[in-house]
Length: 83
Image (cartoon, rainbow, N blue to C red):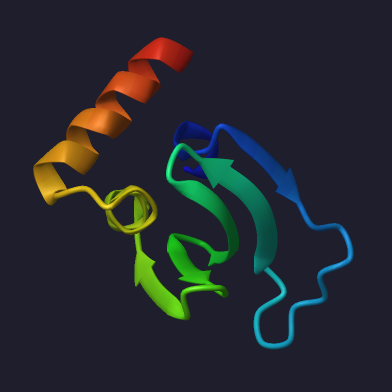
């Protein structure tokens, strides 16, 4: 999911989840700016903005300030480009 959104993305190998061992912390950036996101399955939490949600569409809307329709179109385009 994040790979379709980010210009660059790196997992944080030093992150130790407190609640769910499946959680991961990611550092990355989009054209709108840098982010630090914690993911657990399809749920995400932006540690800098102190906001969370669920799913790729929600995340694109949050990170890039897009409407629902714009976020869906952006994800479709990026999925098509990356194959």
